[in-house]
Amino acid sequence: LLLVEKIKARRRVLGIGQAADEKAADGGFIDLPQLAEEADDDLMVEKLTEKALAQLDQKAASSELSDEKRAAMAQQADAYLQGAVAQIVFEQAVQAIPDDLEFRQGFISVLSQFADMTQLRQLVLDSIQRDFAADAEARAFLCTVHLGAVSAESPELVDALQRAAAGFKQALGALDTPAMWSQYIAFLAQWRETCTGTDSLRAYLAALLKRAVAAISDNRDTRLSAELALACASELESSHGAASMELLNWLADATQRFSESAELWHRRLAALIAASHDGTVASGAASLARIDSLFSGQALPQAAGSRALWDLWFDWTEQCFGRGQVSVGQVQSRFISAFARVTQQRTVQAVSTDSDGMARLRALLAHLQVRYVDWAWGLPAGCSLSEAVELAHDDSDSEPDSDERMEPQTAGNLDAVRQAYRNVSRQAFPTPGFYRRCIELETDVKQQTMLHEMACRVDAADTQPWLAYLAHLVGLQQLTQASQVYWRASKSISEDQQPAFAAAYQAMFSS
Image 1: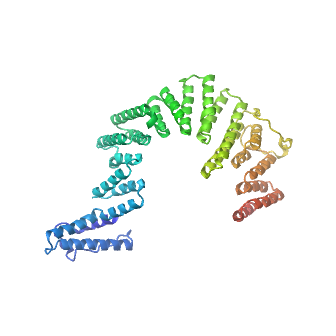
Image 2: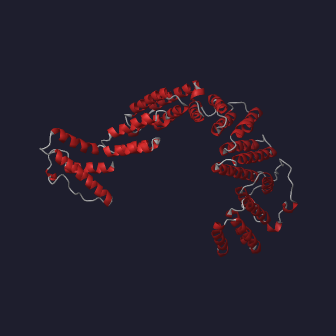
Image 3: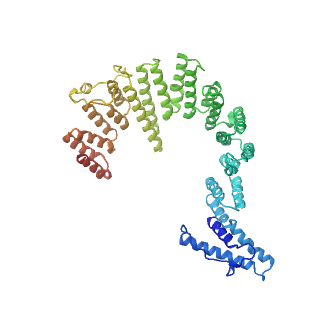
């Protein structure tokens, strides 16, 4: 298409294809200078193509030809200039990748950059309508493709949006599915936000949104999906408020229908927490008990891998702790329970082939463990963690050596932190990230050394904990112990990591 556009531009300059042109008396071809961005091969193709077209023009102008032959030659040249070759390539591509909607959408975008491609553009759109009749995304694209040429400030926008809305109405009549309704809701919401300066148009789109949500609500069994329930919740929040009973009732029904949707549970519980603060629902113990029950009894068991849901749970828990509604022991018990639930989820995930899922659960467990330690660090001085379970204490490391204490960088409850990391170390499959955070907060050298030692045992093949441990020992000038740790590490890490590991260790002595 770019080649066609260049040749059309040259032909316009030369006057080829117009009335008699004396500049092209040598056969209609003039060798224009090469552009800086044109490669030699591309220029050769252009020249050969242009020369072939010029010869067609010359023959078509010959008085020796019949009118039918002359018209046929002109038609050949016009067909090329209107994208006939591109059409052939497109049809071959469709045969090779018949289910690739993105390719056809991209081709429409390319065609919009060139003139005189109306016929080819319509051919592509017809192919989408024919081959993707049951695809909601394809139908939505056909409804809105004309909007790409209309700006938000254009007076033609009203008619264009009405045309799109009519197209969606027809599409929903043929494809009454949750996916198609999701596309419609997304279209209306997007343009309502885009038309910021046109109140009447925003009101029109808002009315269509309200009508669409009502239509979905009337047929929830067939039209609703988890994704669509979230989209409708956003509309209800916009129209009624974040703590409205309309929104709460909608989300209560949605979480019953799609109980495994972490996003829906998060949306419902966040709205319920906001409502309890606003007094929309009963406050105090009844509200606290209700929210706790929804978190621990329904939401988290159904979506144990959701970091956002766990964070909402502990945000809520820490708020309740700050108001004196839950005790230190209850908060700690919730953390320990969370570690157990996520660890159990990791055990279940281990039998699958989803390596990304396992990585997310490892990261979630590390995140929760770090959050537990940070919460302990922020407790008031003198506040001790009450043990959620019986723990065996090692008296040898319960009291750090006062001669080796370092000054803390910031004030925090270090005793509570030590209780927290002992709890995790003995009960909750600690992660390297957890140990890193503990080392950052710990001020006692012996305790730091113990934490480094424990961190290296989590995954002995990981070089980073070993290097952190060695840097700690070298910094303390404990070179004999560093040499012993280096020897242990070299036996644990893989051979391909040995050179980089050795180089990193040696660099510690030169810095």
